[in-house]
Image (cartoon, rainbow, N blue to C red; front, side, top):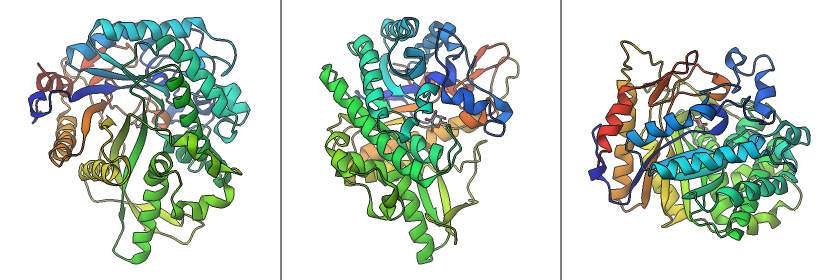
Length: 440
Ligand code: FCB
C-alpha cells in the first residue's frame, strides 16, 4: 500500500465489511426464507440462480473469519444481522439459535480486540413480510422497530456502533424501480412508498435504540457520482436528477427534513399520503454518517418517461462489475456531505472496494488491481482529512469473496479469496498489503 496507519490520525479506524445473507449460509440455523431466496429461484433474476443457502458458511466458520480480521490488523468489523434468522416470520417468534449466533459473534469480536459495527438490515427481508407488501407497506416501520428491539436488547450493550439500514437507495430504487434486486419490482408508486418507508423505518429503529440507551448510532447511505454525457443543459439536468434520487434524497430526508424538489417532480404524486409529517422521526439526530462509494455513471437525457435519462458508457478503466474507477467521486461526496448536510458530524467510509476476476495460483492471489484501487481511494480520504473534513474511519468491502446479489458468486470483492466448492479461504495480495499497512 502507498499508505500506512501512521499517515492517519491516532483515532482513525480501519475496518472491513460483510453482510449476513452474503456470507452466513442462510439454510442453516433455523433462519426463515428471505425474499432473496425466492427472487433467486425465479429465472432471469440472479446469475446461475445462485442463492445464499450456503454462501461462505460463515455461520460455522466465523471464528476463522474473525481471526482473519484480527490478523489483518483491522480495528473494526462491520457486520449485519439477518431479520429472517432472528425472526423467521418477521414478527413474533424469535429463533433463539439465531440470536445466540450473533451473541457469540459479537463476543468473538470483543475477544479479538475488534470493535463490532452492527447494521440491522442488509436486505434479507423475511418472505412473510414481503407477502404483506414489504417496504411498500407503512406497517413495516413498526415490524422493523420490533426486530430492532429484539436484536439490540441482546447485543446493544456490546456493539461499538449501530446503523438501522444498509443503503436505502438499494432498498428503494434498485429493488422497486429498476427491479435488479428483490423484490424485483419496476413501479414508480412502489418506489415512492418504499423510498419513504425505508427512511421512516430508519427513524423508528433509531428511536428504539436510543430508548435502550445505545450510543454511537448512524446511517449508511450509498453514493454514486453522476457525470453529464456532454455539456448540454439537458445532460446537466439529467445528471443532476440522477444525483437527486440516488444521493440527495436520503441526505435531505435525514438532515434537511424534506425531499429534494427535483426528485419530487417525479415521485411526488406517488408518495404515501401525509408523508411530510414523518420528518420528525426521520431526521432524529445521528452520531455519524457512513458513506458507501464505488463508482460513477455517465448520464444522458432521453425521451422516455420521468426520469427521462439513461446511462452511457464511460471511458475510464473498469472493475469486473463494469464499474468505472473514479476515486475523485469519493472525495467529492465526503466534501459535499460535510459542507451541505452533516456540517461537522463524524463521517465514515463504510464500504469501498472492487470486484476482480481473482484466481488462486500456487496458493497465492495476485490482485494488484485491488491494491491500486484501495490506494487511490484511501488517498482521497486522506485529502479530505487534510481539508478539515472529519472522516474518522475507512472500511473496505469486503473481508472475503461472497454472494454478490444478482451477480451470484461471479463477482469477487474480497481481500480473502473463497473457493465456493471447498470453502477454503486464501488471503489475496491485497490482504497482505493491508495487514502490513495497518501494523501497529
Ligand atoms: C453494496 C452493498 C454490498 C455489496 C457491494 C458491492 O451496494 O452494500 O452488499 O453488494 O455493494
